[in-house]
Image (cartoon, rainbow, N blue to C red; front, top):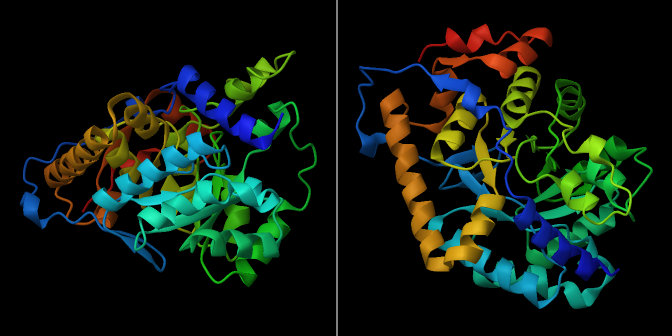
Amino acid sequence: MTRAQRKQDHINYALSTGQQRKTGFDEVAFVHQSLPNIAVDEVHLQSEIGELTWSSPIFINAMTGGGGESTTKINQELSILSRETGLAIAVGSQMSALKDPAERKTYEVVRKHNPDGMIFGNLGSEATVQQARDAVEMIRADALQIHLNVIQELTMPEGDRDFQGALERIQNIAENLSVPVIVKETGFGISKEAAESLSDSTISAIDIGGFGGTNFSKIENQRRKRMLDFFDEWGIPTAVSIAESYAVSDKPILASGGIQNSLDIVKSLGLGASAVGMAGVILKQLLETGLNDTIEEVNQIHTDIQFLMCALGCRRIDDLHKVPMVLSGHIYHWLETRGLNPRGYSNRCM
């Protein structure tokens, strides 16, 4: 099977397997503030991740590219969506274009239709420094995502089986690249141990890519003769992974993994994220309702976020890191047994 065929399979299976809603956000609640002392027009949605700044707390997370005309069209429309709504956007893994120059256009289309936007390149942790430089040059990327996808690779019939030296390669890329490096998981969550290791490197941010959204184990299992279904429920729920990483890391935390709506976004920011990536929900809406309706929906989500932040008395994204939240159920138990003090969220104050 070619890489292009595999990319198209991923899109089809992602849509058919859907979002699992096992993120943990339903066990997170804000404490209502009756005296927020703020007006909606005082709320600012600008995101700041180190030297990176864009006008929304949302970014379109890596989805596709390298799958011929079908992925070119998807990336073109996602690029226009990002341009019209102020979202940053990440492309899918560019390794296919580095190995087959004919696939470059499936990624280059993003910069073509959003010449001034915030765009992230994407490669796996097996990449070399030169490949990282080539990926950045291909789309004039403002940052480079390095993705961690151990479970996907193990489940993938033709996947990698050797994961030695990943942290050293990431560090080497971060030290020798001209743009910031963001390390991201692909749907199974970053633990506090991984976050601590990454914090000792010179990367710029951690995208926790938590469990509960698109499940790449289920996707790859659809392509296997003998399913490895023990990986289908493997991972750290998104809400838990945000809290684990935020508790131990001095790097900005980006949240992604099954985030479906404006309340999930604001809960992610409240748990400690500085920006939020969305992928599956946006792709589904784009393919089902078209570009114009998706632009309208994203603009409405921005309004919803402003309303939620106003209700909590928050003028800036960072203010959400101080609002009191109550954690319950499985997420509370997980963080408590991991020694991460879930009660601390309940006693925060502006």
